[in-house]
Amino acid sequence: MVMDHEKQRARYVAGTEGAPPVPPPGGYRNARRQSGPVVQQQPAVPVPSGTATLSDAAAATKKPASALGWIALIAGILFALILLITLAVGATDVLYGVTMLALQLVIVAVIIGALFTARGRTLAAIALAITLVFNVATVGGLSALQTSASGSYDGMKTEEQKHEEAYPGIKGTDPQDARTQQSLEEVKTEADSLFADIRERVTAEFGYEWVQVGGEDLRPERNGYGGESMLIEYTSIGWATTEPIQDYSVKLQVMDVIDSVAAEHGLPSLYSFNGEYSGIDPSMIAKLYGSDDPREQHTWEYYTENYPDPMRFYANIYDLSNDPSGDFLKTREAQQARTGEPLEGLQMVVIASAVLSESDRAEFEEKLQEYPGFQ
Image 1 (cartoon, rainbow, N blue to C red):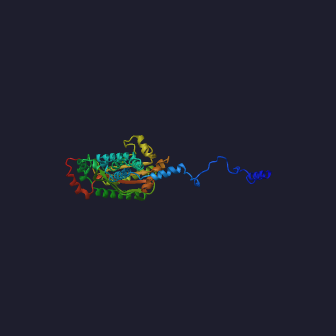
Image 2: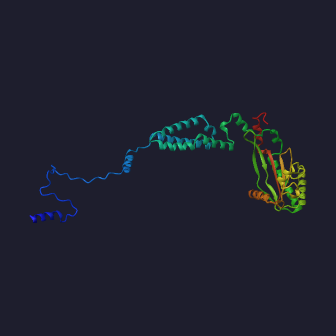
Image 3: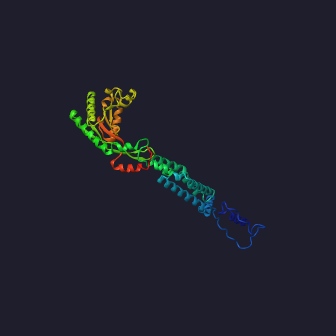
């Protein structure tokens, strides 16, 4: 009996540390028995996370953008292209026309409609951004600036205004003046002759050498009606001495020589803008020429003309020895950078306004027939 008990004890203890006790022989009383075949339990399947589940669900339900969104985007792009093309050709009147404004309203309505659709909202937002950048107000303003700078308002002008723009003369002047005064070619010839004689006399008496300054310039005169006339403003090639003229008495002698040559060409005596008898206020003279005393001025400016003919002759002397501040030197250096002219010395130029070329005379006469009473 004792031996059976020891065997029973060893059965429960040996090699079973921590394990539950085995049931007694014959099992526990009233234990339930499961009938039927034993079903083997499958291992648990891991449940996917909530994030992965939502992403998979969104991917499974994602649909392409709606047709209205694509329509809004394409319409916005096409409208922007239309505005840019209109800007390029300068058709400001078309930009502000009723048709263009109505078209913009229609496109805005389509974009707003697409914004309220779930599948078209992204494309509609892109179309709205394009429309905000390229719209009638913005592009129209740029076009207005462009036409203002170039003076091209053809689409907004009446036929009468366009007719006036083509007037060959200048408003407020008698067109007969252009026909009776010196022609462009005559002014050029006279200027070249005058320059040649002055250079010869000044070089002979003072030994100065000369260099050309700048180039000949021909600019159409505005006609006063928004267009260009057939008359020209002529600026000759300039001439300058290659060395300074700083002595006050020498300056006076040089101007006397120029005055005598000008008189030989039928021009009145030289008029001094910087002199005390110029009629200009002394404070203004000092501002323009560095001082109201000619002995201390950095610029002398003399002038004559052959009125009623159009030629005007200018002779200037620049003297940097009368520029203690150095401000005028900066001005001369900037001018030299543009034209290559000497910083100091004597310079001459001829300017003639509203001159008519001989080659344009017949056309000028013919066009004037279309403007009876114009002046």
